Image 1 (cartoon, each protein chain N blue to C red):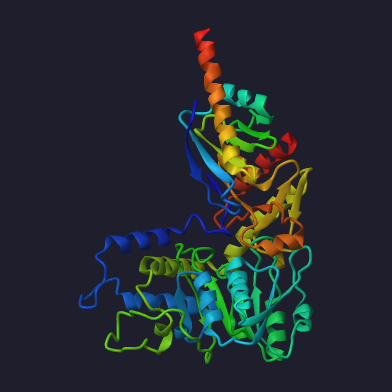
Image 2 (cartoon, rainbow over the protein chains, first blue to last red):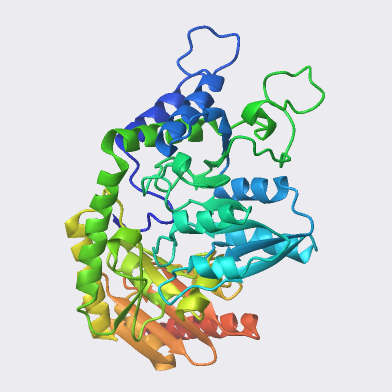
Length: 379
Length: 104
């Protein structure tokens, strides 16, 4: 089976991720009184934070909060900030993990919300963000890289607009963490949310958020922490404030191993490998009559994510036929980004999305091209 | 040939109208051609696993591959149950015609 759905979740995972997770789940679970354990839970979390800090240019790893994924992290940020009466600026390119929490806050009368438009490729003009600013604007929320068109926003410019106007900037880096070099020390951002199971090569159920020094949130959940049990209230130091409950330790182990893989291989190197496959695919599909592609071809501002449609086929039929006839896994539909599809003109049925990774081979891309050629001819 | 199970299919679009049909046996070519008598059939036998899609206008849309015991159906609103029932009847009709041939 050829897997081209890495924008949803990455596969295969690097060998070290598989080995580390298997080793962890095969070992007796750690408990505090056990000496010489290879898997001390508290150390495992801190090790993960340290690796992520290295990857993201974070000087204080305690500013990294580990969560069950980008969705929980986004909810932590939006519900953790004091936003009552505030105006928030976001965009039509956002994933539902951003749109829904913000819409709920808007519906509940907590915030006012503006969603700036994008062009037909999905690109946002930082000037539009500036023009949307009101006296009560407090926050800009931006999707760094689209899971529909793969377009990468000019994050530095957008964050600068926010910074220049005294606004906070929250970045949804679910598609770009591990996929693009990211150094938060060089960006005027307040929070960056990431998913562990995409290009950080961890398991599903992992992710987190970087919070800039000085940014404190109300916790989304309080409860057991495994330490400081005598405290009636949630401990307030470091990430403990936000990480109540039993952590997803196997997932965190996987994310650590995935980040180690990234640090060893180099994010830029892995990105270039995936982009080569993207460019091969885009070039080949451009020569097939009846295929429409979305997004743009500029690889310096593009992820290896390609949305397309085939005349005479709805996207669901394409993905079904690819998987069941040709043994190729892609994704079809709205990809949890309904407004993006409105913007690019595909809101009725969505698109087919192919998302190779650094592990995708040239042959696998060619197999997809041959399959699409057959389908386009057969319509 | 009969419908053994109707499974929920959870994906991007409305799960209320998209279901996975499980048959009690594999889909054979004769069944695919029979389906063609109930709507517009596109059949691509040259695909690595022969693929078909059927539009039974106003009733349902079906797609599947030869040799699998499942197919994916999109039912029609507003009466989803009637839409599913019409498909089940189509499948029953195939079984009856097979029996008739066997008996003849």
